[in-house]
Image (cartoon, rainbow, N blue to C red; front, side, top):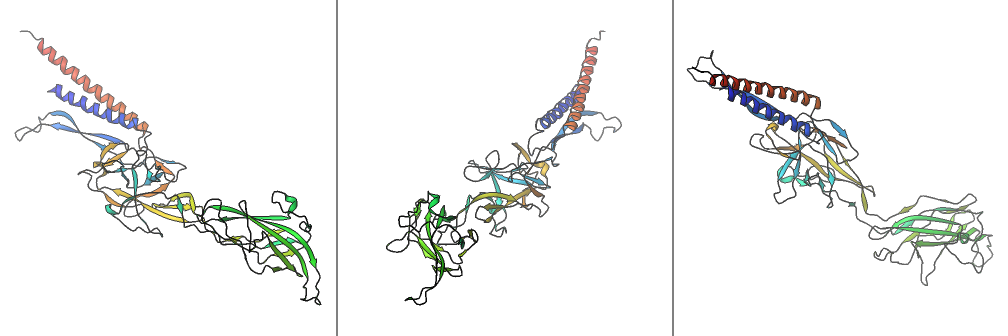
Length: 435
């Protein structure tokens, strides 16, 4: 009997050492939870056995109990690295044919080639859909969907009107007042000033609109006797406009410039309304469009050239600029056009008996009859923990504790081995007794 008693102790110690070794091997595994081997003594008895004379029959491994104590939190620079502080598991859906659902505490996520948020195994992170205000629109298992990061936002609109007042200087040199004058945008000596602004085609593609200002005439005196009477002016300027490399024209026959005339107080006299350029086809290949230039509010004063507030009514398609995750798990994407779009709310699962979950590797668990069915919810609500963005949960293995436990398990093994050796020697002595 003592052989089998010592043997059970050896087997139990081996299991204990294997469990501790597994813990130590995963000390750097994100989201890993250590296990602890639990034992129970073996007693064979019957109703007729004197309880004062009972002798145990060894030990049995009762189970390897998982310890769901939180691991150390590690800060990262990835907004999609998520850590759960408190109870709960992330819900992951595999991309294979099985379409299985697993649970994990490993919140290290990234975006795949199809813009889905996935983990290192390629499984989808499951979320609840939300409306434009971030309110959840569906719950339960049927409401879960995989999180996808959209890359653009907004509907493009071609620029129709560009407005900006300018203040030209009355002391600027005359450049366009000669008979053989030729404007050349590549030659800075042929114009006085320039203004550039961004406009958009029908597909939301940006284009650069540049206007060049050329002083052509000084002011003229008033002549009320003339027919019709001539009002005093302080100067005239020609404005040449390009969108990209295309020269804008107006009217029919086409004229490639707009003439600005200022009255005797330096206020803009003409044009009195926005000037609409003839239709053109953007170099991007988008649909033909027309653009108007509104110079209202422009002045000519003795101070230096300056530009007022630029405005244009085109809309670009917003490009993804970043992703943020709140403590409650709401995921928002921000875009270059200023849009902020809610994408979903991270769904979490918890179990009545998490120690009953089955480990299936890669920091995954699956539900069993012992763990019970998953109860779904979201972070910071209904007993679930809160989310921390830019953080991952490390292993909860304590190296010092495990090494101490390993020494104890090794001593237990040695003691049982010694007991087995002693039992062998006793048996050998008995065999060697001669009559």
